[in-house]
Amino acid sequence: MSTPARLGRYQILGEIGRGAMGVVYRGWDPKLERAVAIKAISADAVSGGTAEEIVARFLREAKLAARIVHPGVVTVYDAGEEQGQLYQVMELVDGESLAARLRRGDFPTRREALELAAQVAEALAAAHQAGVVHRDVKPANILIGKDGRVKVSDFGVAKAVGEATGLTRTGTTVGSPAYMSPEQVRGEHVDQRSDLFSLGVILYEMLLGKRPFPAETLTTLVYQILNADPFANPQAFGSLPSELVAFLKWCLAKDPAQRIPDAATFAAQARALAQKEEVETTLSTVPTMPLAAVGGGVAEPVAASQRRKPRTGLWLALAAMVVLLLAAFWLFRRSSPPPAAVLLAEATPVPQDLSPLASPDIPAAIPSPTPTVAPTATPRPTPTPPPVLTVVKRTVPPTPKPTPPPPVVQTYYGRHGAVFNVDPEDALVEIEGQVIGKADDWDGKGGGKVYLFPGPGTYYAKLSLAGYKTVWVAIVISPHAKDKYADVDWELDKL
Image (cartoon, rainbow, N blue to C red; front, side, top):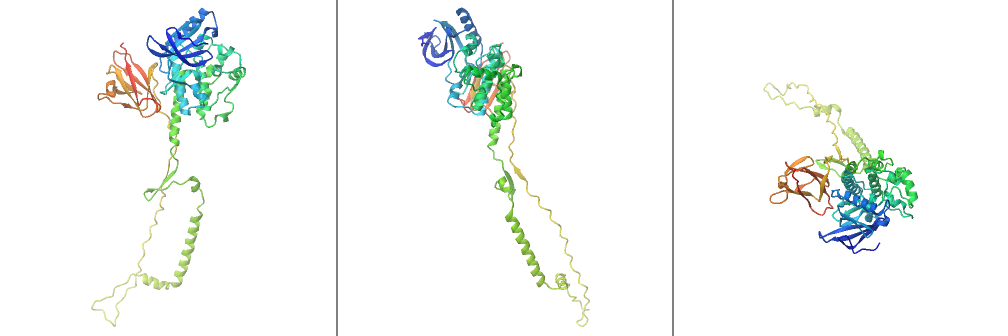
């Protein structure tokens, strides 16, 4: 396919990439003066009807895709046909595809993979609510902007050009069919659960670095999708948590009735697992050690292996002390006076009688000495050893977040907090079910404050005012976001 100078009113500036369905160009819209992405498809590659029927179907699917309004969906601006080429004009995303990252071995962490899948599921939920099934969810259609935002492209294109296109081509190269659901491979009717199967394949690949159906030929691939169990060998999942493996099994169930039912559930489950992964990663950095308080201070940590060693030195010291005590006792007995002398020596002395009746010839009566009875020694209580405190790693369940009523009209990104530039300024701002005040109080200027979030994650804010339509927005707090504070800039519509 040669590069045209223009398609419709759009100027072609260069090629972005090629795929099985056509070429994506960087273009320019001279009327609105903005850069766009243009996907061109040769009408010869499209199956299922006459030329007029193909064009009508392509425009119809483009119109449906343009109805999807969600920050995670690449916006469709226009569509048309010129000189045997169908083209779709879309939002230009400054970034790269997930496929490009995976090809160079840039796999996300477990938490990042779950968060990415959750964002894709949220975009699919908006599309499914608009009545659009993607039918070609794959890494090449998941774009990651330089600001970290995830956007899904090519909604409706697979249906517009004929779903069987990827399976009827000859050769051994396996592309888009690697992510197809079993019902899609069989040519049956597909619904939103087919998209979720494809997303489950992508999540599997991100987590394990390989596809669940690693076939090299189309025939083998089709057989594996329909019959192979990617979970037959539990050892293949390594240290992957059992609940995460169970989630993948749910997503990749071959029977749609046994599969995860909708994209909203997929997003909620993936995000809950991502938050749990973040908590466990944080707790794993805290050392587990016993701390013993001695003399008001803190003892040095003692390794478990050292605590289990027999205390040989201590027993030898005790034995030596016993021998010394016996020797001292034997020497003491040899040099001691008789017992009576010992008693008299220990008795309390009686004072002499100095009265005038006393005479040197008549000794005064001296009472028998009363030995002083030594007080009974009160046994000392056995000292209780100081308690041993152990820092124990435990899993803290993530705080459940309220699910906002669909649709979320916009998603904003920031590293720490958010400001609310909402029109009217008196609109109430409610975050996670708690009203924080008017938007004017949180606009970050003129005395307005900045709302800071407790940590990374997705938070939902409700904007409402009497006489205006209530809307929900999503605020994603991520250390990779471009801006420090998410700028929630929205104008409420009157009822």
